[in-house]
Image 1 (cartoon, rainbow, N blue to C red):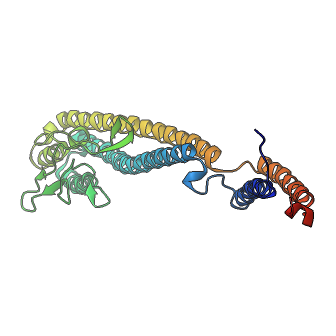
Image 2: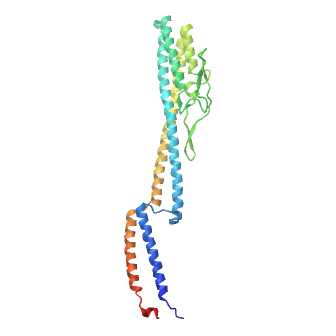
Length: 299
């Protein structure tokens, strides 16, 4: 059985091939002008799915970095307060030692020292109520505006925060505490640094012989506060490392996303040149093949 190939069939086939060639040429031109090889999902469904996943992972890694930076701000604020607190305690130890010294234990000297000790207590209270973004950093998870309050009539300082923990998520299954517990920094309620201040003030006024014993309480407070600094420093270093890891992961994902979405300019330019040559050759071939005569229509 013979098959007759009509001129119309030849024309249709050649036009279809030419159209496909032109579409490929347009696609390459679009890629070079936009710099992207994915302009719509149908260009590469698999690549589009990969790109969406990469973008989700990059957003998550960036959020981990933001969480970490916020945590560093919490811990940095606490570190500044604790450093100042250590300086206050060192000054308190100097004053107490002077008052306990026989040569400086007269009533007038103790009165002057008591005035400075009272001022140091107020400074320590201010540090204990340090805030970050309006929240007391030593108040746990309290909604109060201050961690400690002072009775204006008695001078007694009371803790009104809680033992709540403030954390920041820095990884898939990684959270880090970013607040310093008030108990760790200033001591447990009823036996905290403010009780030590009150004891020293009382001894300066009425029991100077006990000032030597008060030095032990100051040393305990110093040890406690420096230990809190160590805990804070360890958390700070851990968060810094995790921020760096999240940043490196984000960079890797960004590179992967670029490989999927962005066009290889050199390769696309070469393909475009080849496609243009192919297109011109197809046009030339068609112009010769489709030169019809009256005889062709009479077949």
